[in-house]
Image 1 (cartoon, rainbow, N blue to C red):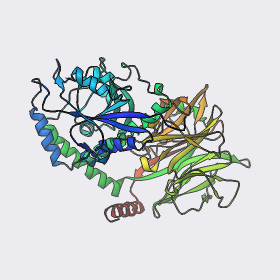
Image 2: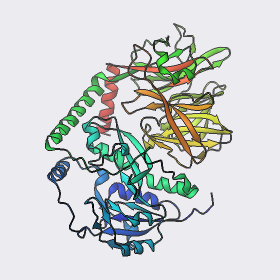
Image 3: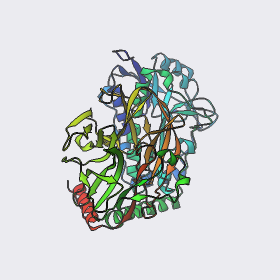
Image 4: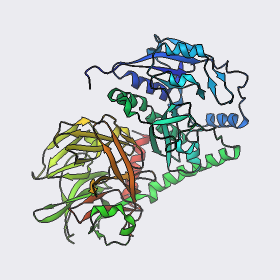
Length: 557
C-alpha cells in the first residue's frame, strides 16, 4: 500500500445540526483516518415532502410514548454534530414523495448540485426511503444502516422483536442502497447475542458496534475497491420492509418478558447457574467431529475432578517424552482466577494437576504450537508465547504486544503463519481478528479487514484448526445461547492478507451425559485422539460468594 493513503471524500444525509451519539461516533472514526474528508452535509427539509406524506399511525404514537418511558439508550441520544462540521458546506434538499408513499426522490437540480462535490460515498442518517439517480451519484454509493437481521426483512423497531420473540441473535447491516428490486445490498453484517433483560442494552450494543463499520469499509476501499463484493440479491436479500410496530397488548407482554428475564438472570447467577467444567479425551481423530451425529455415545475418558471449588476447561494436549500431557485452565471459584495446569494421560487416579505458569493475572486457553504455549492473557494486554522446554517459569515472548487478545490460535497456511483471536476491548465473543507473519515469532501484521467477522455465533476460536480432504477448518465458540453453549466448525474458504471467507460445516453440543450443558474446546492430540471440554450447571457456595463479590464491585467500584 502507498505511504500516502488514497484520499476519500464523503457526505452525510442528516436532519439539522444534531446526530445520534452512535452516528457521531461513526463519523468521528471516519475522520480519524488519514486523508478522509467530510465534504458535504446534505440536510433534509422535512417540511417539503409533498402531499403524499402519511400521518403518524396510532401504533407509531403509542410506540414513541412507550419508548420514552424506558431508559433511553445512550447510543440514540441526540448530540451536537461536532466542531468538525463548522466549516463543512451544507446543502438543503426538499425531497418529494414518489408513486409510493414510502419512496423519496430528489429534484434533478439537487442531484446535480450534490454530484459537483465528487463524493466517494454518503452516510444516510436521514432521507429514509430515498430512491432515484442520487443513489448512483457518489462513487461508491449511499450507505445506510439496517439494525435488524436483513434476511428477515424487518426494520422497526430495532432490537424490540428479537427480545419479544426471544430470538438468540440480533442482526445488523451496513448496506448500499440500490434502485433494483432488492433495494439494498449488504456491505458488512453483524450478529449479536440478544440481551433479553434490557432493550437499552440491546440497542447500545448493536448500534455502538456498527459505528465501527464505515471506517472499516474505507480501509478496504483503499486496498481494493473490488473487495466490496455484493452478494447476489437472491442469496442475501437486504430489502427494506415496512415497520412492524407492536400493538398495545404486545407492549405489555414485552415489559413483562424483560422483567421476567431480569429476575431469572439475577436468581440464576446467584443460586443455580454456577458452571462446572471438566475435560476428557476421545479416541477419535478431530476430523470425526465434522459428523457429530456419528459420535453420539462415544466413550469419553473424563479427567478426575474431586474439588467442588475448582473446574477444568480449555484443554490441549501433546506428546512429551513418550507420554501424552494435557494442558488446561484450572479455575478456582475461591480466588476468581484461572491458572494453567497439566495432567498426564491416561489419567492417574492420585495425580494432582501440576502448575505450569505462576503469573499474577488470569490465564486460560493454553494453545499449543510446537514446543510453545500461547495462553489467553488478555488482562496483561498482550499475546505472548512461552517455551515449555524452559521450566519453571519460562519468560514471556510477546507476539502481539499491547493487544488484549482472547483465545489466540496460531496455525500455518499456504506459506504464512496466521493468528486468530478476539479482543477483550471489543467484546471477546463477537469480533474475530486475524494477524499474519512469515515466521511464528513475527513480526505480525494486522489483517486488512479486521475484524474479519462480527458474529457471536462463531467469532471466538475454540480449538485447533485442522485439514480434511484438502480443506481447512477451524473450531469456534457459539455464544448465541450463552457462554459455552456449543461449538461450530467452519470451513475456511478464503484466507489472504486482504480477504477472509468462511462457511459453517458442523455444530457440536456436549457429548458427555453428565455434563450436557455445553462445550467450547476441541483440540487434536496427534492423528487419532482428541481433547474436549464440557460443562454442567449447579449450585456452589464458593461460586455464590464469587458472584456476590462481582455484583458488589459493579455497584460500588
